[in-house]
Structures are given as C-alpha cells and as structure tokens.
Length: 373
Picture (cartoon, rainbow, N blue to C red):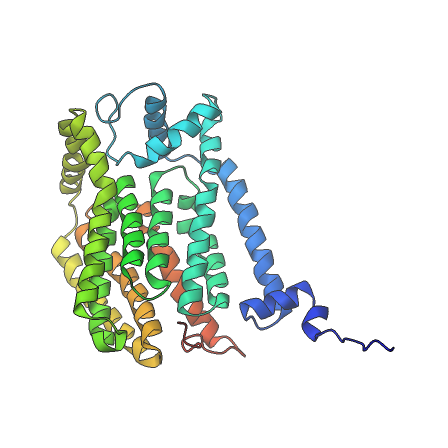
C-alpha cells in the first residue's frame, strides 16, 4: 500500500530568521537579522559598560545602607538615608552571600541585571498590546541604546527596581479588561513602588490623570464599564496600593522609630526640594499644562483612529500616563535628576517605535492593528 507523501509547508522550510520575521510581523529576514544583531550588541554594550562605566555617588550610598542592615544596624536610626527601605532590605541577603570585597559594587550591578530584562520585557509587552510585536521589539532596542536610559539603568540604584515595578503595573493594567483582581495586582505593584521610593507619588498622579481623561475621551459606555464596577476597581486599587508602604510605616512606628523615619523619608526630601527651588515653578506649570493639552488633543486623534474601544482606551491611557508623568515631573518636582526620567523613556519609545514603523517604506501603519480582546 502506497503511503501518501506529506508535503511540508513552506514555513517548515523557512529559515530561523524568516520564522522570526513572521512571528514579529517584520518586513523580512533582513529586518529580523538586524533586530537580533542590535539586541545582542545592546546586551554586550551593557555588560561592558557595567564593568567600565564610572560609579555614581548614589551607588556606594545604597551599598552602605545595605551593609548596615547586614551588620545589624537599622536604617534611619543608625544610618541616614532618604529612601524607602524595601530595596535595601531585599538586597541585604545577597550582599551577605557575596561578602565584603573590593569588587562588591560590580557584583551588585550584575545582581540588578535581571531587573533590566524585566523592564525590557515590559516594554516589549506594552508595545505588543498597544500596537504589534514588531513595535514592541524595536521599542526595546531603541530605548536600550538611548544614552539617557542605558547608562542610568546599569547603575546600582533604587530607581531601576522602581521602574521595573512601575512597568509591571502598567502591563497589568493594559493586559485586558479592568477587573477587581486586576486592580488588586496593579495596586500591589504600585504599593511596592512606594515601598522603594516615595517618588511614586508621580506615578499615582499620572495614572489618576490618565485614567480620568481617557475615560472621558473614549466614553464610559464605549468602554463598557459601569460606575459601580469602576468604583469597586478603584477601591481595590487604592487599598492595595497602601498595603506595602503601610506595613513599612507600621514596622518603624512599632519599633519606636517613627520620628527618624518621618524625617529621613518625608521632611528631608521636602526640605531638599524647597532649597532647590531655583526655577520658576509657575512658568513650568503653565508650559506643562499647554503641552499636556496638546497631548490630550493628539490622544483624541489616536482614539478616533482606533476602531476597537478597548484598544483605543489602552493606547490613550498609556500615552496620557507617559505625558502626565513628564508634566508632573516638570511642574511639581523641583529637584529633577537624570534617573527621574527612567519611567518615562520606555513608554515614550513605544510610541516612537510605532511612529517610525508607520512611516517606514512598505510597512503597514501600526496605528490600526486587528483589535485585541
């Protein structure tokens, strides 16, 4: 009995890069090879700079606080620090395992390398959810080579864990329909952001402003959410956001260290910002308000161009979150540093990658993909 021949499909005979191009929706194997090569170069470039890039003064400061926890000292009481303690407490066991050595800062930089890949995955995921896998892949590469993000994110500092948690929170919020469990997870992640840095106040302001404005632009009816459901989700989100910082505050209060904790984390930072108030905050507030109004107009056009209301809400929400963070940073944050821009860069490069791909020759504009449910 003759056995019928089963012909393989063309995809089975395709090269690895051709399959990769098909998976990411790229123009062809050449683009996939270019993206893979640039990604590998980005990792090599990062590792080389982790070993040779100069150390910022913040890095030994954080290491000193961790050293204090390892040796039985208590943050704020025995060692001054103006950050929330989760970062230092979490890394104290790792410091203890590595031990005190001359190269300890290099070791600790490498300990944060997985956090960088978490942030990169979040960038890819956000780009995929809003536009396409192609946009997500190029957004990771573009932001990875951007000097302001590359060099700051390789340092041993609280901000890199802070940004990864923030991006995870955004991923959770845009991964599907808003539900109470989703709000609980997102609120917990935002609470962990607060447990790392009180600069997360900017995150809270950004999310609140973006959610309200986007809901107004899309329309509650089109979004398919009732006021009761939205109230439940908001309550779950706010409650879980308070849990992690609440536990930390309660711990230090029960240890009788509330005055020291309050001074280092709150009073000192407020005083430092007041002393650094060398710019005209009113002028920055006006400029930021005008710029944010322009972003609202652009967001409205993006929402109108997107057929699916759920996808339109996600795109508008992330775009306004990115813009409102930058506006709040310039309007209310008097002492700005280069690490304060870390949360802004991945979100901004998602939209930059989308814009570049939409105007590239032979490419379909990623502004109108198939609706995702």
